[in-house]
Length: 144
Image (cartoon, rainbow, N blue to C red; front, side, top):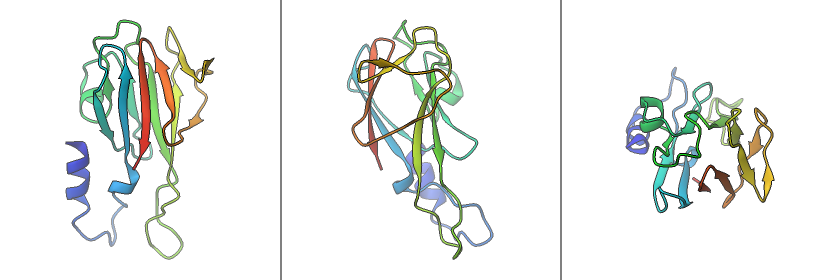
């Protein structure tokens, strides 16, 4: 739904407006293990508006985030997905040097990448196919 809204927002002219998230600027997350296995999430983080990952069922998790409410090992607010590099380029076109980052926000049980615990509040560049374990769930990232 968030992706559909983002695509609809791109139908209008960008003259004089902030650039909108496009299909190339989204990230898909597939839950591969845990109580939410096989769930998919299309996320559209924006500058200064990250997507949150957690056990909460709040709006910011349901609308443009990941709610893992059945996973009791996930903190209420566990992590966030940040985007950087969006904006206008020198020729007033949309900058396509978009990078996505995963950041554990100091969760109780932490987050794990390739068997290593992530440092809280430290950004990790998301690569195609990267898998991060949060609680009892594994998140696989597919770049748009």
